[in-house]
Image 1 (cartoon, rainbow, N blue to C red):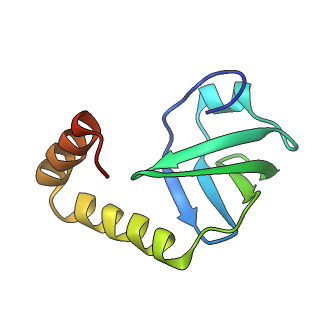
Image 2 (cartoon, rainbow, N blue to C red):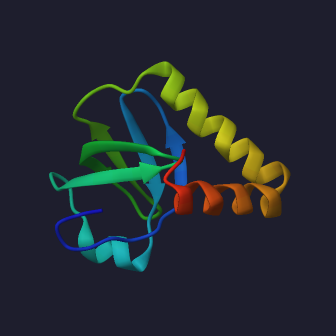
Length: 101
């Protein structure tokens, strides 16, 4: 999420201090180095600033470090999606509808 809008993106890398997302045409128009954005994934929200861009990705540095447990939870979420996309997608939709994580 940015001041310019909300866009879906693919999370390429996540650490306690930042993240990298795949660059899309919409993100290309929305974000430049120095811009702020809110990353939302698997029930986690983290505010960060764009610190780097290249032809394929945008890198963010988070304002506040994430807890290691939060990073591991997102990685487990990604592994579940990769292992059984239909079941994980249904569970994510259910959690979203019911307000759970």
